[in-house]
Length: 493
Ligand code: GDG
Image (cartoon, rainbow, N blue to C red; front, side, top):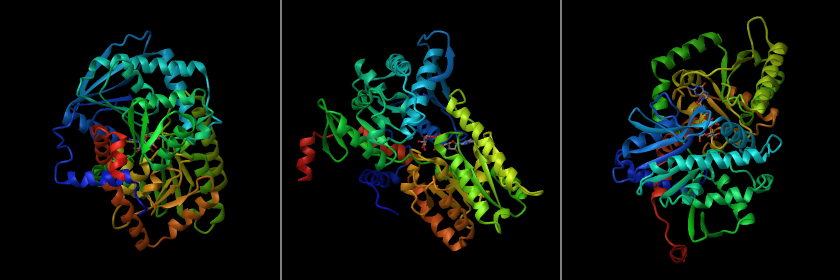
């Protein structure tokens, strides 16, 4: 395993200290207020993030606040309170214009493509920026009365970058953290965003800013050094207008043990059998991704096509199953990727299929998590090749779902945040059809011994740095008040 960043090592020590306690034995901790665009409190049917945040909210009390997903004629700020599986949630409806400008606009047509290095797709419209600011002001105004003086507040993701500043303007002096789930783009790309510096500066109102990897954190620091008037006062510490801000590289994990169990459940077993019997002895390659241009699906299909062309002797012994539930259908670039993928899958299948074999099974719908777990387990290869990804949880789920006695091989893009934690996967450049083709061939020919060795090294980290580890590591950083920078320097000397 590669050298772990200092923050991660520090986090691991916390984990060891806590190992003797139950992971939820955090009685002395403050109440948590989680703020994110969408709220998905609940049990194991949800993704790991929802499970972990729900567990923390259940253990310490607190509330999860965000957009309801509903549209109302005129914004009223009316809060819908609910309790789901013991977790208190508070949601607010937005008006049509907010959804268009803030969600479909600035979040998904400006920031998402830009932060995934796609300035060719990023749209810079003043109305989007205005709507983003307005929606964040509305969120701040609405959540304000729900925040108590001892609470820690944790804001999630790119939809809500300026929310911390809006809360400070309204007098909130609590500890407030921010976690970015997507990559932080290189400085020269970010500079294409009008008012980029002003947006980034709003982040200085947080106490802790978290990224998945040191690479994203370094890109952030690079921008701050070049474009903003803030002092770097220590390793990953910034000083701005009398405030100290800690930066943290803290990779999100999955609910690994639960996912392993899910992969052995009856429903997973049924899905496994169904898929296996349909393969009639062929090897399965699986891809599971939201239908999004950042996930590199076109390049993946082209890499697979290359493999089919270069390996006529084995090509009929494999099948690629790509599960890709549609997302963000209101945004044009998502409609385009959908139709271009359909065309590509059709072309490849048309050119290569035979009477008893179709090379790509392209499935445009979602499945329950336990079914996915069974499909992962049935696959000899997990093909996870985003062009750019903050972390990528599918890579971790694929690993956790494997049979220890007969594990499959993970082929992973070196441009996913997950790659920094998974050096034993077969790392590929997703833009290179040749590299992808080589990796598929290599994975199919890999000995059981090598498969086991690589899997063991990878799964260990997936289990150790699971989603509770992520939550606790971030939270520890957020609860811990910074020393003055002078003291830090003295200690170092
Ligand atoms: C963002 C960042 C970062 C997919 N299809 C189905 C389904 N899924 C689940 C997967 C996985 C999740 O969706 C996708 O997670 P990713 O990490 O791949 O990607 P994003 O949605 O882009 O998330 C990403 C993440 O935030 C967390 O910080 O890792 O980099 O982009 O859990 O299993 N789930 C079900 N049916 C499906 O068909 N139930």
